Amino acid sequence: MTRSLVVVMLILVVSLTTACRNPYPKADKKLAAELSQLVYPKDAPMGEDLDILVRRDGGTLRVVNRTPRKFENVQLWLNQQWVGKIDAIDIGRENTFSLGRFVNQYGEKYPTAGLLNPDRALKLVLAELFDPATGKRHRLTVLLRQ
Image (cartoon, rainbow, N blue to C red; front, top):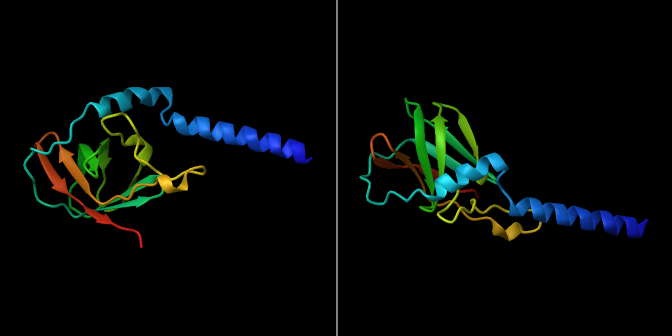
């Protein structure tokens, strides 16, 4: 039994490391390539700070929109490096987005901890909403986990 357990564990490790190398299913590779072409809008004028709370929870980004308006077709920039296109941020409820859908200029997804690399997680310290329709950046409130 010990030998079969070792074989099962090796198969599990190989499958997990292979899955970690390809964070995008085939349908999402196009999205990752598109997002990696976006440049951080550092020269865009700053709009007002928005009453939107952002919290990283493992591999999930939790966004609570406390403003009286819904935001549609916007970009969320994390730590000025990773961007995700967001179809809608609804009013007054927790909106959740996978951090695997945020990529940097190299097409790499936002670093999150995994089974084989628990120290890989990157702290979220800055979140900004960029609205291509207005051309403005808006700072959001990041809640840090204690």
